[in-house]
Image (cartoon, rainbow, N blue to C red; front, side):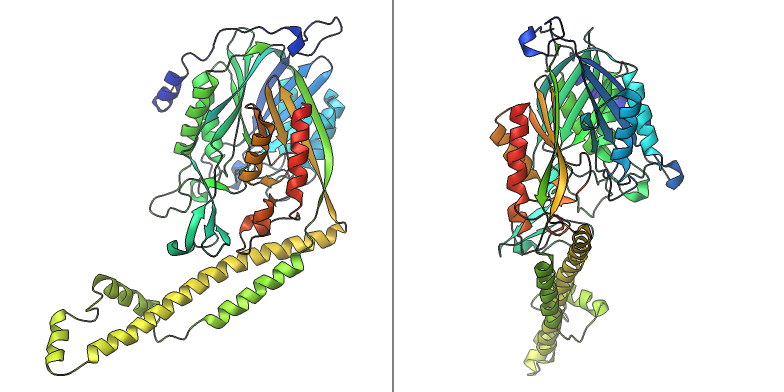
Length: 513
């Protein structure tokens, strides 16, 4: 055990709480009417593409196989950006993995859930084969387990990346463009500090696995450091090294579509995912140690396809951005200065507003002689500096518009190529004892998860995006109709009506579980 995790170990010295036994009414029954045991096995394979460049920390596929009576469920987590569409994971990945598992292990395709952490690590081209191998390895290690659910809290590592401006529009924080002016910002959006937890123990009480779900983009490890699983990789490493005994940590990405790592846009020091992951790992351990596990926890799974309405307003939104572009370009002002002369003028005005061009002595001397050359120079320079500042602000707005316009055009082409007005997506449900999870393939924004959990009124009901496919961002209706053009609004295939449809279905799934 390294010193780095000594605090984590100290927080977890009493991980195994007293045994709690439940009766058959709380678990599935076998053919004899007795409570059927819950079996579980876990395994992992490294999927880092080490030929793609330097490696900061490894990426993994992790498999959890759960079995109770005739029901078998496979939960897979990937340190990858998405299940299809973007990154190295192909659009055929889900079908190929499910087909192999059905053929080799007899697992129903609908009982296979695959979640991507959304980290930007580069994975191997044969990740599908490595995934199948991990699942088979986990299936060969099935053992009776005790299960328990809980929730932790972590509010130090994430922030909402959307900014509501005083004009009512919203913009977002991305490295692709600059922040708006401070004086234009009215408020920021919420975060979800809840950490959803499932803990599986062996029969002797030693930990086998901890599954934790949290909402935040894993985009804090810069490319200069090399391939990385980002903060979830560090969190899982901290958890596993602390628990020992061959235990495994499974990170499931929640509703983090509009959630960034805290201080994501900070420019005064290098980005670093490790301290964020360590804090999350400690919070997981602190909460998981309080969970009481029980034998024969009920296992349930559901999976259905719903048809969401595709966006039908691309043409209008593209035209609106293009009109804004034309207006902004026309507003650019001619100036007598360039950046080389602008910067010292701005500094001089900031340091000495009353006497920017010379010492006060020079101004006072000229005044005694009736001369006003310096004040006139200052007036002319003030106009030039103000115009140049306005041009910079226009440039920043154009950068945001250009980036999001490209996203709208991309998805307009995809929608036209699809040739149908709806988008079929999987909504899966999983229950393991008191732990309940509903999943979705889009980048759910945080308010959607908060809405569902509040309506469900269940402390152990959680929501995960990025699962069983990838359909880009799925923002709230309000975000989708935003006139400020943020990534979540433009990098999206769905119409605003999708939100109520999914939230209704998610609650239905959770209640049936």
